[in-house]
Structure formats: structure tokens, C-alpha cells
Length: 127
Image (cartoon, rainbow, N blue to C red; front, side):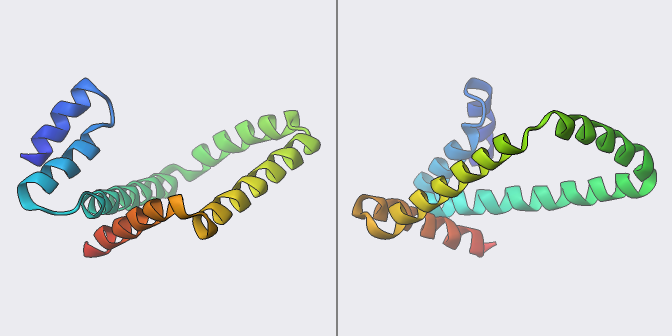
């Protein structure tokens, strides 16, 4: 039932099916939503691992063609990049990371979000 609901929701609003699945599992089996989403994330991680295996197989079979293609694209991209722009983006990413860490550790309204993420971890660990 949950998977069918998820597919139906994806037809209406793309990527909403995962949340719908978690809500249906919550209502039918009384599993907390954060833990249900954690199991869904674990499924996506397993999907990613399978994708890596397929990509590795493709690289082993015809690796030189694929690697040459990406080398050519990366050389063109880095030739256009300016080192000061890369430095500015790095500093912005560092500042953003520091702000997120401070928000999670010291500000109380983010405690609910921290508890939700803890529930996601519990759900992820169930698989």
C-alpha cells in the first residue's frame, strides 16, 4: 500500500512519493515518520552502491573511452576557472559550514531538527 501511494504521489508531485510512503507506514504500522524516512534513505544508499557497481563495471569494460571524455571536459572547465573565484567559493562554503555547526550545537529551536536527524539515523540503522 505504501509503495503504491508513493508511486501515485510521484505522478502528481515529483519526489513527493518518498515522504508519502513514510506517512503511510506511520499511519498503518505506527512507525515514527523520521525512522521510516531513515529506512527510505538506507534504500537510496543501497541504490547508490548498486549504481557504483554498474559504473565500475562500465569503466572496466570501456574505461579509456570514458576517462578520455571526462578528461577533455574537465580540462576545458578548469581552463576557464579563475583561482580567486574558486577561493571565494571555498570561503563561502567554510562560513556556511561553521554557521550550520553553531546552529545545531547552541541554538535551542534547532533541537527538534537534531532529534529528527537522530530518528533518521535510527531508521537507517534498522536496515
